[in-house]
Length: 183
Image (tube, rainbow, N blue to C red):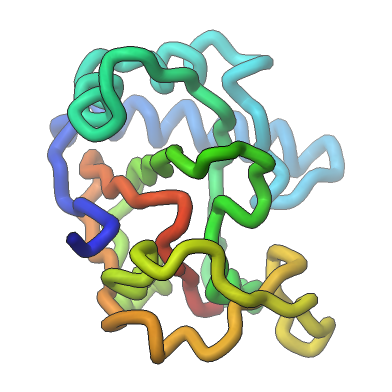
């Protein structure tokens, strides 16, 4: 109905602390090599630990509940918004970036830290997935958008919901659901 589920507990405090520790070391390596906090992409192809995370039975089970038994892990990316980061993620649909027809994918967000409106958690436009592929424009440099597309007139497609998560919880959303996050 809404295009998302949020607050599903996957890891306890000790388990997510281990993942956070691994992420911290991965981030330090990437940044020391000249990358940014947003450049940890396709890590499942380079790191057995990230690959194992994508295949975690609790996460896979949640996805299978939505999409069926036959699933493929398409991509992985760590999004790390450092304190006072000015980058935004404008309203967009993941399906606009993935050439998959028909559109039938789900994005999983695993919080390694608590996330809420105070630290720029993701926001969903509930119900927007029911409208199919929506009009987008090229993002403008002044927007400081991480991505190159920005959806148009998003308020007409649903209700904005903050995706508050505790560390160790996941949210899941349709690839057609509008979502964003502030700087």
